[in-house]
Length: 119
Image (cartoon, rainbow, N blue to C red; front, top):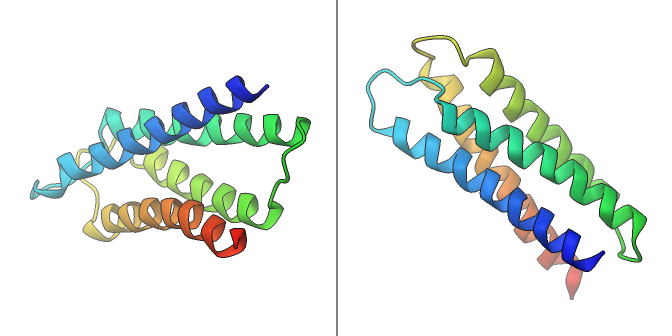
């Protein structure tokens, strides 16, 4: 079960890396849009996160349900914004920077929430 958890964590992190990379590609563009990398990254991170939570729940690991809930809501908002704006040739800067900020917040929750409660 531990190897499955590690593989899912890797896939989850790769999904966020793809989402972040897609955002960085668009950051210098005057007309920002949602690209395939953002779509695939958001979907991969979200689905791998759900699967990872299921594996953690099934195993002996303690699961911080509040943290998972926050990450779930933020991830769902990211995925919704990405999918709702996927076919638009141009998106508003506010939507783009909102997706960017939510992505950073979700990663921050993963890193800092764990650190704050670990010691």
